[in-house]
Length: 248
Image (cartoon, rainbow, N blue to C red; front, side):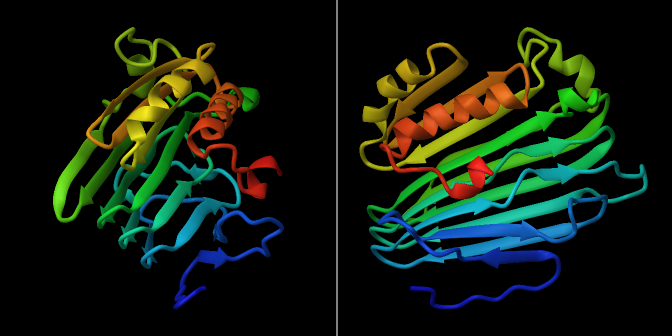
């Protein structure tokens, strides 16, 4: 049951009717059609005790070119989970355009036995459109706490010359798409081997420790990345169908 909803600006939330016994789904829409230099979007989600929710987006988000004088675009998502709550944060891909500028933060605060599954996927230009991202200002951070104790924190900040960085064997090895998967739940470690098996034909690195599972996917393009994400969610969501917008 929805307790409170407040929205303003270009960011909108829609709650489609459920056609199955799966968790309620909240779909985010950016009516501006993309994010430009200096734009700021924020999302706060509070899941009460023993509730379940899937949060996704209507489509891929687009980060357009910013002027050198523009401040970085900001996207801040805060998710709070009470004891026993379950939240799957499954936004579709973020597509970067050449000379974009983004500071994105995902902050998860969990209590007790709460469960979180999240993905952050990035595409460096659309290959089918002949787009190439030469330069970009990008800072992407994820922070997760449980019962007030920091359990996971990382900051992804590639150098501004993105095209050259992508070619490095220690970076993306020429790939144009990547994703991070984060699962936080008591049995996260039990999903590690099934995840590796399901993505054996993709470029995946995954580790699990102390109730956390972190996976990294690198793909040649957005289409391959999506196939890998769908395969991974088939394992981590334990057969639950993806939100319908993922198949539109």
